[in-house]
Image (cartoon, rainbow, N blue to C red; front, side, top):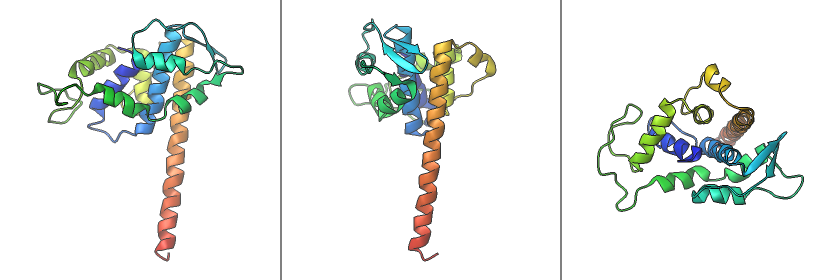
Length: 200
C-alpha cells in the first residue's frame, strides 16, 4: 500500500471517533503522495520546488495519476502549490477507493479500540495494514496523520524523518494551519451576517 492509502484507511477508522476535516485530510494525502513520488524518484525536491524526474515504477493508478500531474515547465511548482492543487477533494477519492465491491458491507465485524460499534463500510484488510503500519511507527505516516489531526506524534518520531519528508510534512502543517484560519474567518463572517440579519 502507498502512504496515502495507509493514511486514508487509518483516517476511515479514526474518523468514526473524531470530527475529521476532509480538507485537512486531503492536504495530508497530497503530501503522502508527494513523499511516495520522491521515494520512487519520480520527483526531486530542490529548495521548495518540485522537479520532475523519471516515471515511477508502481502499479498504483492514483499514484501514477499524481506523477502525471507534476508540473514539468520551469519555474516548476512549489510544495505548497502542489498540496493545494492536488489536494482538492482527494480525501473523498481515497475514501471511495476503500469501499469494498458488492454490497459495500464487510463480511465480519471489525473490533478495534479506534472505532465505535457497528460495521465499517471500508476494506478491512486495508484498515488492518494501515493500523499495523501506524503501530510500527512509520515516521512519515505518523507525522502526516498527526498533521491531519488523527494521531499524535513525538519529537523522536519527527527526528526519524529525512530531509525531504521534513519539508513535505512542514508544508502540510502550514497548509492545514492556513485552512483552519480560513475556516475561522468564514465562521466569524457568517456569525456577523447572522447578527445583522437578526437586527443586532
